[in-house]
Image (tube, rainbow, N blue to C red; front, side, top):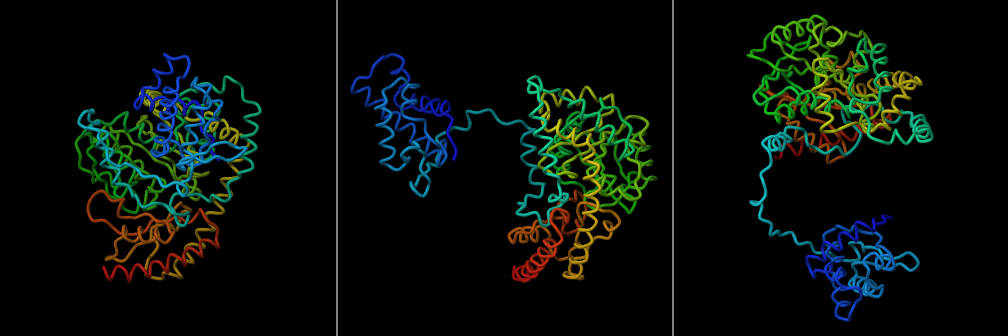
Length: 518
């Protein structure tokens, strides 16, 4: 049961009472209560509390301060507070529980009527910024279907095998040994211990050689992408984006009012030499596993992209969100490791490898951009939780990450096999799985739909049946859109995979009947 913060309640009561009966002035100027003042005060108190309940400032089951304490803090008699409370109990806005105190009543106990009308004149407020309006517009680009369950949400690792007890022990050890200075403000770039451990991790698992001072700790790939883009992109700057691409990236560049230039793909990745532009500022790419197609960019195409960027004086943002899953077998060097001109910004994340709620990622920044990006971070997000950083650092240092990584890959390969076999047996040729993802472990697969089916309608319908998928068409930024379902298969166990594919197939058949009628 929620206990209401007494100070916040008193502040609210006083502020509301000023509007109604100017109670604050009465309390300041009078050292005692006359009969009339007593009446004015308890009515003010009653109305203030009543209004706070009807406007949901005080939530259901919130505990009110004891009458004696509230009387002392407001410097009024306890009988005045009791009178106000009694009126609220009588009208069923609050309830009295003997031995426990007074609590805000539930909706079932008291039907609350809300006044939805407003007398505010919005013309008296300043307009929001052009950039804020751009962000409001482009949020619609993103797939807004609610994720109702884990099956078959893309981008999730095997959540059920995360070593919770190891993480809990590391957390307990942190709080046992933490010093008072560690509870103060943290450095913008991140804890040195974590950045050193990430640097070592990257050398071993990604063949990336970078110094710890080039690493900035963020909350994930999108946070990193925002920092990099906002540091470089002005209105109408040319930004080259793979087509199709990650919808959030497309939305971000649109919100920054960049001129987005789509780049086509083939089986080797981005077709950069086919792009026609004047002075491109950025190139956004996902080479380890192109999002959403899963295509792994060939080594020749990577070298070609670096050369093209050098000739155009452009910066490359390499979003390596899927590295361990798609580079475990036959790994290819990252663009960052091939770069000799410091024109690649590298984005990595632990959210896809451990679990999304951890909210920890990182970016490797070319030295000529270090000050700019770090400054932007310091004046916006400031720093990522040092507690999480310290625990993750210990998780890496004690070799827990290495062991978990191997277990994740093994589990993902097993679940992918079960998913493919079960899905193909149930859907046969109705929805065909993209063969691009069969070579890698990956975090998702695309199911190609028949031409006449609309994937946005289908994803919405499946969501109503408890199945989460994302629409393939929402990833296209130019030209003809392909329709399909982007599906993850890692987050649930083998039995649930089979059970949910059965549910999905039944929902799909129902959708076909519904779609024909409409």
